[in-house]
Length: 356
Image (cartoon, rainbow, N blue to C red; front, side, top):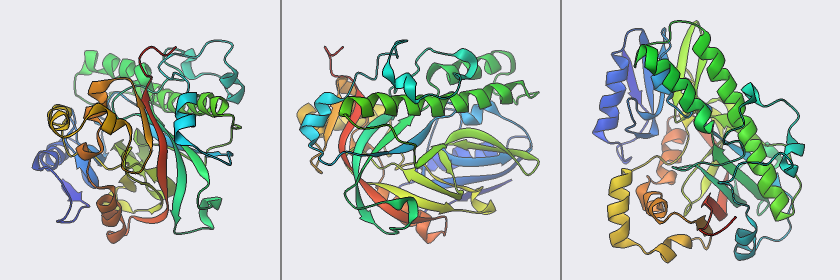
């Protein structure tokens, strides 16, 4: 079966990630694997890939079903990073029954699953207050330079992990034999979107801003039933005519893009900068090159809220590929058109120690 990687010779693509693409392409029923310019190795399947098959493979989606990025307008006139960083709530704590964030919810909680709801999680998840930088297409998304947005990157937390575990305990890495997995999967995708909304409601209320509807909210970890088969996305955002936020790092710009990819790219685009180093390598390299305080204030002047020192090093901007190259590759291959950049002001990873 075919494999296409949409990256230039200037891009940082590990051979191990390409090897994983070919391993996936060799699975029964696979049709086509499209690697994005943020491609990197993952557990059991490459991250930054869209994989079309006649067979449904839950392992290709992974445990964080419904993980994605939402972007919310923020109606604040002044944004002083130091002051606003202190106002961020503790997003490690679950929502209480009387939290005002529930006012932003108009639907039932999918599956009635409350564990972890309203929390960000670890790894590469984050919440970021940012300003709009360069605007390439001012009419699209009604964006204005220097206006503020809140970016929320999170997923289904423990729910997705529970769903994948239930499948693998019976079927291992094999395919899903019936529609039972899809029903659970769809519930987790809805849960992830609700989680991002509740996180935004918590933060915006703490910052003194009103809740607004997101201008972007798309999952990049999911399976889609398409053309009589299954399109698995693992760290790949839908690229079929929708607007997407492609995350850089906490020390670089991110990009809002108009996505317009076709069948060769499995109707997908990149979801972020993509890791350049493993977490172990980033920790080792980071401790030799950076200080904790240096990582809490970026070169752009933004502030990083993170009480976990190890996570600070693992998620350092140097652990990731250059977002500019990822965007250039998408543009050069005709998969996306930049709409605007976002510039980080405050990036929340996990609460500072001692905060309640």
